[in-house]
Image 1 (cartoon, chains in turn orange, red):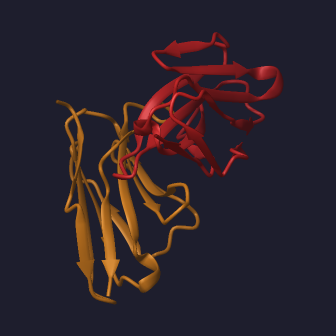
Image 2 (cartoon, helix red, strand yellow):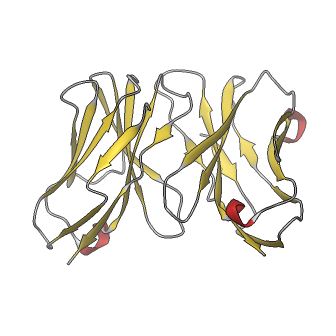
Length: 112
Length: 115
């Protein structure tokens, strides 16, 4: 089945220790997104790639970076995680901008 | 700028009751998409429906139905004969049909269906 896969499902990292979350898709969609979701809140868009074009949200901290080496994969790098970065990180894809997005199961990040 | 308002923070119903989740949106654009997503306790957001701004026809899918009214800028979601498995957070969202548009989410409505 075509899908969006996120690894790992749970990630524990130490304060200040870099961490990378990964996302892959078999839908062959042009757009990939990274969201941060904290408890009882809506997902907050961090950035997205339309093909190779990177689009950063204005309020995304510099501590967050992303890479999309090919159509199928996208990575979220948190260079120096703080306690406030503990959250669920959701990856999503869509065929084109503005169309429905399909989400992965998420990676729950804990910062100790 | 776009805005989506889900005024109901939490709704509790008993199984088999019908329930309607409200969604009101704001946009100056004339072409846009509206969406509903379901987020069960497992955390994965599940796409339910997309509606184009030029198509006001209501839609029914099993126990789910959606009422889109441009005159009131609303896109409400009704679950008929609710079940415990319907318990989840439901998000309404909007995107523009232009450029690098992204989703604008409402804050979500938590639906609790008890046996």
